[in-house]
Amino acid sequence: MNSPTPASRGGVARVCRYLYRVPLLLVHLLLFLPMLLIAMLPPWGRMRVGERTFEHAAVNAWSAGLMWIFGFRLHRIGTPLPGAVLFVANHVSWVDISMLHSQRMMGFVAKQEIAGWPVVGWLAARGQTIFHQRGSTESLGGVMQEMVVRLREGKAVGVFPEGRTRGGHEVGPFHARIFQAAVETQVPIQPVALRYGWRGDAQTIVAFGPKESFFANFLRVLGEPARRAEVHFLAPIDTHDLEGRRRIAETSRARILAAMSAE
Image (cartoon, rainbow, N blue to C red; front, top):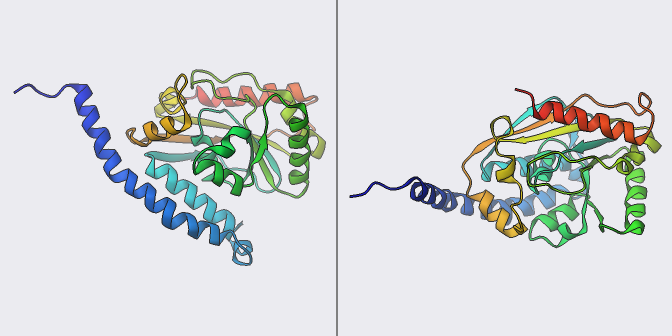
């Protein structure tokens, strides 16, 4: 009898992963998601659990659980700043939002199309996401205004300054305008590096493939082997220390690139 090829063994292993991950995902969505929504309601959502509100602790736990079901084994390096802060991260996939939400509650700036994605779009709306219509100057102005409002209220905002994913091959240039809200409100900016796999060797696996839809990526990643996922909270940038949005954007990107290439 011929021994199974590596491809067939991989196929069998993938099927096995689906057999136990799909039921876990359904339980996570059908049982724990309603519990999360209840936890976000007043008055208990505003109760304190250590330094966090119960609402934020529940979002952290639910997001971490989702990452675990998809096979990501989270490792945090550094500490996210408390209070009002602009988090800026490299963008690999939709998974990035869950990874960051597993560590710190923040309202993300995301493309409008995400609002229509199954499950994730609805969760994004519940998670204080600020949706932006690409190519619309009017939409961008509204996003910037909303970011300023939230930062002044003491809330955290998360952005992906590249503006889009790039297949996991590179960290693209950062758009400087997105940093204006932090400059205007004088809140700190904390760069965050997101690495998938050992030393980032799974960036292209987690990222969207050429013309790959969200649903196709969702299913494919669900069947992938378990792997390390690192979130690096890097040294913050004080907007008083650097002059100009472009300089801040370049400094943020440089710190992320340094963390991405670290051993």
